[in-house]
Image (cartoon, rainbow, N blue to C red; front, top):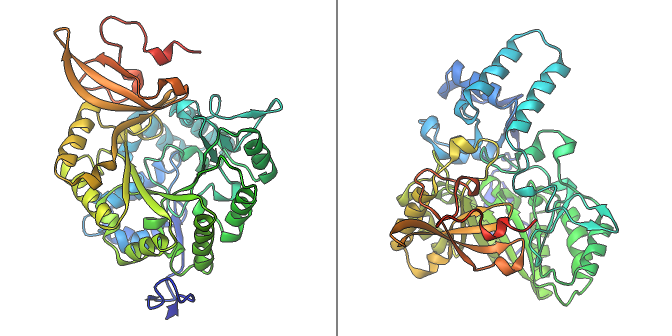
Length: 447
C-alpha cells in the first residue's frame, strides 16, 4: 500500500500502489476487457472510425471507477470519453470508412482527414485571428487576451489531458496538427507581456489541461510570475478536468504534495487561487478518490469553481443539473457557468437549443438554495464575448429573447441588454436575429 507522505493532507488515506496512470486510445482501447465484453464489433468499429477525426483518449481511472459497463451506451461518462458514430455527420463518417477500406496512401488519407477537420470549424470564436495578442509586431502564439482583465496561457507541456472529452471545443490541440495548436514554452515572453499590460488582473492557465504537467514545470511559470509582485495581479486560475478524470494527481502522484504546496504558496503570497473544475455530471462527484482530492485542494486555501456545457446525451435534463448543483455545494464547490456547446467538432450531437437550455437552467435553480445559484447560464462563449440568455418576454406585441453580455471583447458591452427574434431551434449566436427589424446587434457593428 502507498501512503501519502505529508502529515498535513489526509495522511491516513491509502491506495493500492498498482493504480498507476495508463492511457487508452484508438491504438489500444480494444485491450480493455470491458470494451470486448460490453461493445459489439460494430460499436468498436464506430469508435475506430470517428477517432480518426475527433481525438480519443481515456484512462484506467475513468474506465474502472466512473463508467457503468453494464449499460455503457446510456452512461454519460462513457459518452464523454468514447467517440460515438453520431458525433460525425453521415457524410463524414462514410468518407472515412470508405477511405479506410481503400488502398489510398497515408498522405492521401491525411488530406481527407484534414479536409474534414477544417469543415468542423476547428477554431471557433476567433481564437487564433482575434484573441492572439501581439507584441512588437509579433503574434504571441500560446497566449490569448480576449478580455482586457484576463490573460490565458497555454503552456506547451500542458496541451494534452488525462482523458479527452468528446465535446471539447479545443479538440484541435490534440490531433497532432501543429498549425492548429496554441502553445508556448517561452516564459520570458509571458513575463514581458504581463509587465507591458498592467490592465491584466487575472491569469488563467489552460489547455489541454495544465495540471497534467509535472509540478516543477508549473512552478517555473507560476514562481516567475508571482516574483514580479505585479500590483495589478489579483487572481491565478487553472482550468482542469483532473479532479474527476485523474484525482490521483492530487493524492498519490509522486509530486502531488509538491503541487499542493505550490497552491499554498500562491495563496500565501496573497493571490486568489481558483481551480476551474470541469464537472459535466454528478456521477463524477460520487467517488471517494474525487471527494478526497477536492478536500486536499481546498485545504491549501484554493477555491474550486465548477463549469460545464449543457450537453445533449449527457446532462440536458433538469434533475441532473439540480443534483449536480446540490452535490457541488455540499462539497464546498462554487457553481460558475452553464455553457452552450461551442460551434465546433461534434457540436450537432451535443447541441441543446437556447430555449430548452434556459428552461432546464431555470427549473434546476428553482429547486436549489441561493448558494448553488451562483451558476450563470446558459452562456454562449462567442467571438464577441460571453453572452447570457436571460429568457423570453413580450414586447411590442411579440415574444422576443432577452440577452446580455457578461464579458465582452469591448468592455463597454458588459451588462448591456439586447433582444432577438423568437426562434425555438436556435442554439448559437449565428442562429439568432435582432428583434424589431434591426439589421445587426450592437456588437456586430464594430470591426
